[in-house]
Amino acid sequence: MHRPAVCAFLQQSAIRRTFSTALTILRSTEVPAANENDILSTKKLSPKEKVKLIFHEVNPNEISSTEIINVFNQLKSIVTLHGKGVLKPEKVELKQLVALFLKDIEALSVSNISNAVLFLSSVGYEFDKQSRSTIVSGLLQAIKRSPVGQIIQVVASRNLGNLIISDIEVQNEAIQTLQKRWVEVRNPKDLCRVLQLAQHFDKKFLSRIEDAIVESVESSKFEEKVSLILSLFKAKRRPTPALRALGYHLSKSPDQMTMNQCIGLLYAVSGLSFHDPGLIERICNDAVSTLSMNKTTPIQIGKLATSLGILRCRHKELLEQISEWCISNPSVLEPSVLIPVVMTLATVDYHPINGETFFKLIEQKLTPSTVGSSSKWIDVVWAMTILGIVKPETIIDTLQESQIEKLAEVD
Image (tube, rainbow, N blue to C red; front, side):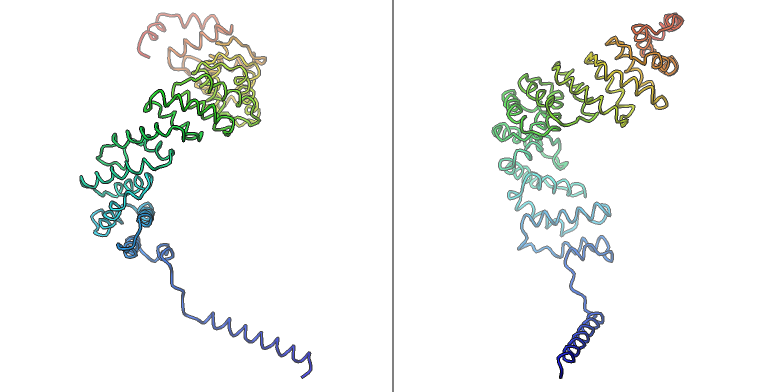
């Protein structure tokens, strides 16, 4: 046979074999066996059948503590989707699984124990006195070997698993362990969480945490520096070295602050009496840039004006931007937004360049009927008097005996 003919014959044979194989596959009625996840995900099984299948796959003699937690997680997924009714707390298989969980509890982490107990409590499972004691013992042992992040979480927990157990005992163990391992608390997020729980710790530990802030500030992210200042404010602590370090690095950072960050920081530095000129200037400049993007909400304008007023900050460019925003958005201006603005302008004694237009807007929007509260209306009249825009008849009406009586009443 000539070579071209041989090649043609071989090609035709290959095509026939391929076509024959494809037909065999298409005609085959055999289906590969589904694994456990495939079975659980199929829509043909009811939720209760899925639960039954999960328990059927559990081998009490071979299951590890990690596998027990995985089973709880699978059950939790089904309960979350279909409701608590699919898993009865008195179910024998569930009780057997809980017994295995309690037997190996000392091998589990704090988060695994608390999450499992929370799940079991959510489906109505009731622990007896001995079980509660075992859980507490397991938690106490787990705390000692846990990362500091998990220990902080225990301190923050007010009721682990909604159990009728001595949460104070568990929490105290977490507090003592954390204070002994203070050198490990270096992550900015952990530092913030500790400050938010400052009432639980002693002064020596908190001083060490504040020293850790100074050491970690240079390597921390921009948003973490912001969070640290806000956390110090919430904890009512004002360590000068930490605040100076945070203020310096924030003012020199190339990152742009969001409007909420600007508002929060202005309020925090005021509450901390930390009037760092460089930081305040940086915050105000970023607020100006954000305002120019026209993405600011009326609520943010009110909060920004309030923060500036509390701080008594006379940043001309920012005050101009706020008044310009109000003029450009009259339809969304409520008294709750305008009152802080006019009060701040009066507090820092500043007249915007577009004052004539802005003050007309105030006269239209702020009246006794729109303001509502008598005490707030007195504040508005005071602000308009300081700014020199109040009308004589407004003062006369405000000082009438009926108005004074209203002010004397509980507002």
